[in-house]
Each structure stands twice: as structure tokens, then as C-alpha cells.
Length: 247
Ligand SMILES: [Zn+2]
Image 1 (cartoon, rainbow, N blue to C red):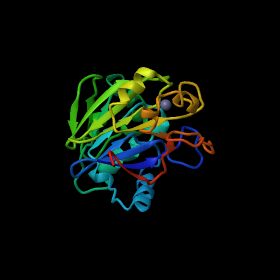
Image 2 (cartoon, helix red, strand yellow; image 1 turned 180 degrees about the horizontal axis):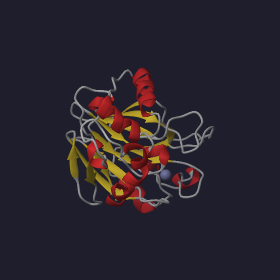
Image 3 (spheres, protein in one colour; image 1 turned 180 degrees about the vertical axis):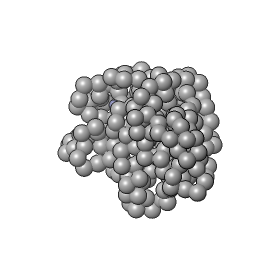
Image 4 (cartoon, helix red, strand yellow; image 1 turned 45 degrees about the vertical axis):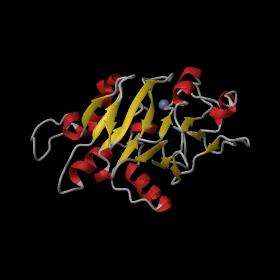
């Protein structure tokens, strides 16, 4: 399993794309979150990583929550899948039920207009196939098994575990520090954990209290611009980096 890191920034970054990645499954890419300027983000990550990235081939989006630095690219993604191809298709949008319940409130003012096909009002289902994620219930995408857990954040947010037959990737989602969440994530071979200094986020010194065995698996994302991370096992991810999980 490979993770292509597409964005590492936090909500206020002036230098980076929003925290996000692509997981390479069996023949296809699965998106984790969808921040703004998503097409520019994929172009930049493709150039840096050497991995071809085409929005038309990303059929699954795992959306952790609705903060803009994680979801502002959905409008562009949905329109690109409808208008930038001769064969329009809907990606599956996997999110907590309470996220799916409100996502159209965010997208509708820009996306509920008429189309050539319907001549009337568009709905979320015209662009995406909504797929509710239930914490504790595994589901299959792109040959991988995914499960989720609610994190502690200011709005409903999910952390993720993504497994193939041999390795597992953990993704904290935005969260304040919660030992139970880390313990759940520690099933993974590699844990991508957010690290920030704002309310409802996890500070580096909190992660530093974890056992060395867990810290050795953690890579950091969502750091504020210019944040200095002390020497140690928990290294920040880099945009365009390809992380080989389990090796
Ligand atoms: Zn957030």
C-alpha cells in the first residue's frame, strides 16, 4: 500500500494545500479528504511524486469532516466528474451520516442549478454517491477494508483505518488529543496524526507523551506554517511524498 501525500497544511496555511492524501488500492486511487484547489493540488503531487493522478479515476472519497480545509474541493471535484469528461460518473462519497446529512447545505448554493440532463434542480446524488460510514462497521473500497471512529473535534469528524491484505494505514482526522483514539489507530503500521496548536487539535507535546512504540509509527500532518518539530521519531509529512506503508 502506498500513500501519496497531497496536502499537509492546516486551515490557515498560506503555503500548503489542506491536509489530504491518496491511497493506492488495487488499480485505483482513494482520496482522503478534498481540500480547495484540488486539481492544482493533484497536479503538484503528481509532479513531485511521479505518480499519475487523474481526478476521473478517483472513484472513492473518504471525507473526514466538513471544515473547508478538508472539503472545499468537493464542488470542483463534482463538476470535473460531470463536465471535464465525455463519460460523466459519480464518485462514492464516504462520510459519517451526520456529515452527509449537512453536506448539501454547503454545496447546494453552487451546485443545485439546472443541467443539460435534468433541466431542473440538481441534488447531491447527481454528483456523488453518498455512502454513510458507520463507526465499527467495516466496508470495502478499491480492494481495501476501511473502518472509522469518531474523533473529538468541533464538528462531527472521523478517523480512519485502511487495510489491505498485509498492512494498515491509520489517519487521525482532525482531533484533540485522545488516548482512546490513538490506541485505536495504533493497530496500524503507519499513523498519520494531525498536529496543531489550535482549539480542538492535538499538540506535539501531547503526542510526545505516547509510548515510543506508537511514536515510531506516527507521521505528522496539519502543522501550522513554520512550525518547528523537535528531533525524534515523529516526522512531518511532505507534500508529494510517497509513503510505503509497512516498509
Ligand atoms: Zn477541522
